Length: 151
Length: 235
Image (cartoon, rainbow over all chains, first blue to last red; front, side, top):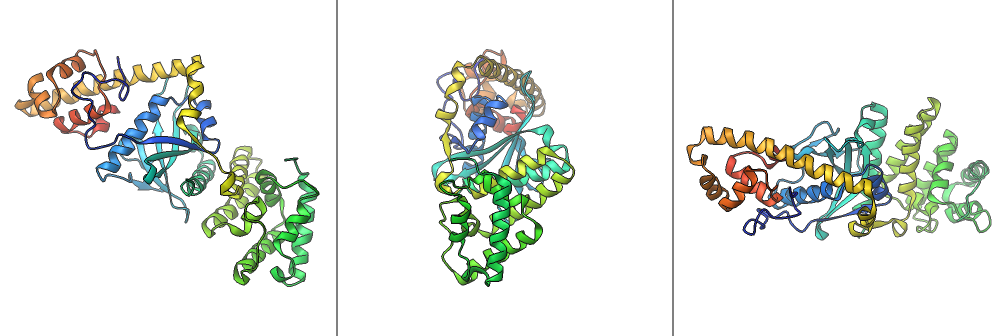
């Protein structure tokens, strides 16, 4: 079976509805190592980019805001605000293949380049402890703050 | 860049901060003097080294550093080279500085309870904040993911994700499709759904028989026709 974003079911439905296409991704700092470590696949991230593009194109961005990633909106997305650093967005990837674990993909947007800029990929289980969660969210927000000011 | 012995650097840093205060703050000891002293010959503190120094400073020295930073901002005196980690201490915007203060406090608290994980995260975050923008890296997906093709584990993960998505989609689709057809008689046949969604009957047929998993654009069309959020079909 083909996968979303990889092959059309047939020739007539390739057109993306309501935008969403054309968003790409890049990685801030060592986030690409974290992606590889957690075996987050290109397909999972293709979907993330598509969903972000779709929500932006339909004026449904940003996702639901909260101070904690347990407060999530559609597609497992959430907006996290920490202190005065501004927002960092996060998507939880769960129901993942055997040998991998649920992860949180933290990212920011570079809208003028239609970029999802991934700043951290963290195992979800690390958010279960309050102290570690707080510092992880602060760290992700700090990275997002730095990352969104880069070209 | 050669690693700097952290403890001597901490002592030098504390001594210089004390000197700066004794001489009246920024006017007496410019940040560039501190940086020069700390460079220890040709060695320059990396962001990680400087982060390690900062978390080890005594609370008194930290207070002095905070005052020093405020004095630099108030007097607009020439700060250290902003393209160095040390210079970033003085050039970074207030939200980042506030974050550095929080991370330092987190690190010290974590050190007391020997929480290595929190120590590592907070130290890494301070290092990121201290890294000059010109030295920050952004890597395109094509480059970062190029290794996936030759990695059997990643290929297996890709396949597993695709298969899992396909199974989940089909189960969700069938549930939503049945509910929509029961509620709306005009969505009962494949032809009716195809018309409502703006796709071909062949596409609907291929989806419903599990031959294909549609593209995300098609999933969005189907979701709209079936009256649900796309996320319901993808969950």
